[in-house]
Amino acid sequence: MKRPSGVFTFDLRLLAEDRDGTWLWGPVGSPWHAPHDSGSLPVPVVIWLAAGRPWAAWWVGDPADRRLEIDICLPPEPVEGGWRYVDLELDPVLHVDDGRVEIEDWDEWEESRRDGWMSAADAELARVTAERCAEVLRRRDEPWLERGWQLLRAAYWDTAGATKTFTHPLDPAWLAGVDRSARILDYGCGYGRLMAQLSDLGFTDIVGVDVSPALIARGRQARPDLDFAVLESPPVLNRPAASFDVILLFAVLTCVPDDDAQRALVAELHRLLAPGGLVYVSDLVLQPDKRYSEAGVFTTTDGAVCRHHEPGYLRSLFADFELAGERHIEVETMNGNRAAGLQMLVRRR
Image (cartoon, rainbow, N blue to C red; front, side, top):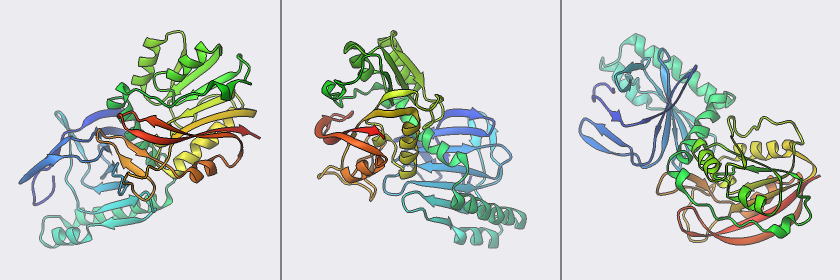
């Protein structure tokens, strides 16, 4: 509720409940209603709130301005069929792409305080809470900051994304020198398309992990003979260092728009890979006819937040590896569009 405007409602879906609160998801097209207007969400969002905590966090998957907005409010209350809270105007915001942190709507806060829509105690609660939250956003050291982005990505892959067909090609010649008993990890395996291909080529020790339980269930149903697991705490996989001889990373970086998250993922692959082991990378590059944000980020029509890359940037992510092979490809994307891609074979030094 926003005073004096009235009640604003959002039709959201429950994502998760944990000891820290409730996580809700609004996919693209989710309806919202205001006292004199209505519409639908043009971009996906994840919301995190808890009873007793005077703010609610919104992760907004807008490719032009990916941001984490914190709604300062009276402590949210669970009600039949959902949650409600009274907005206290101030909104600390972290703009992900350029790192800016600002507190928005000081003018609305001042107007509400002056006109009596907000008590002096509520106004002070809003000011103090907004400044504390803004400092948390500046430090960027709380685990929940990345948790929201992870859930935003995973929510898509458990719904619309779980029905997709993936097409990046595997070149068996790049693995010709790899022993058939090599320990292979398909990181971001989806429904196991590449795992099945490797198994058919005679490889015997293949593990696939993915953030999407729905895709993993689809893979287990299609190939119950293969070893699938849900990636519970991405990018970390609960395996010892040097557990694998080969790692596949096919169309995964495109699903992780943030630079820091991509670097953390590559660092985890480096940890998991045995010395001399290979990472086979396949991902999408910037397309000449597509409009992007500055970082190459965009949202698909069905709500996936994706990223295309400069080839040089992809190479730089694997600067600690030795480049063993590279080729340019053209693929059909999961939504049926033709797109240019880059494949790299890199070796851990």
